[in-house]
Length: 116
Length: 183
Image 1: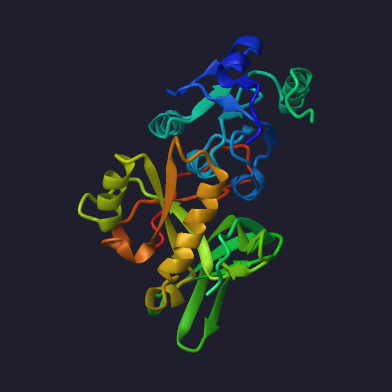
Image 2: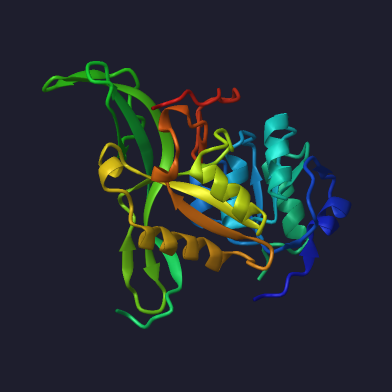
């Protein structure tokens, strides 16, 4: 397995990300951007950060199935309490940011995520 | 029997909709996969004694699994979708399994076949085990595991409040409403 060089803790500290759910920090390996849970189930990989504007409850079991390291809700979208509570149960990090997805992708790329 | 220790990955991925139809005459429910751009809701048509009404669409995927080592393909064209158990019925066998397995850091999902066929011909356990293997091969299993259970373990389908893992109201900026019971 490829050694991860960044953790969710590093990201929270380096980018203005607000943790919403209860979770244990873990290694991050790559980024997946999509607003469709079916797309995530088909394409995301274990350890990926998942960037989305979707906030409904289905994002949590989908994220859990593919073992993403965190869900980052972009553009300051409000996340329902039911979604946050469910994420806590699965120990899945939900982080939020006011940044639009495009700008966040740029910052993550600058930090080295996505570079081979 | 193959000796291959299969390493599964998704193949033949098709994006579309799971369409739910209900007959007002016999109350039967049926589901199928559609690759239409946007299946129209409320469409009513007659088929024999049945009057089918399109009740709901759920954006979803259909896929097969292929072994990276031996190229064997396992078809999952009969898989309608995966459901997250919300623990709504304490006596339900799914919830009993959920509580037992979660204590062992194993998360469960429930696999549904297309209705009504799946009621009499559920997806075989061997295929569900392959699906569990696929999800577990992709994850760090030292943290947690996935177990796929068959939907016929559900105590009472009409009272089940489980959540299908699917895309809802993708064309709306509004938050989706809670799923109405479909059964």
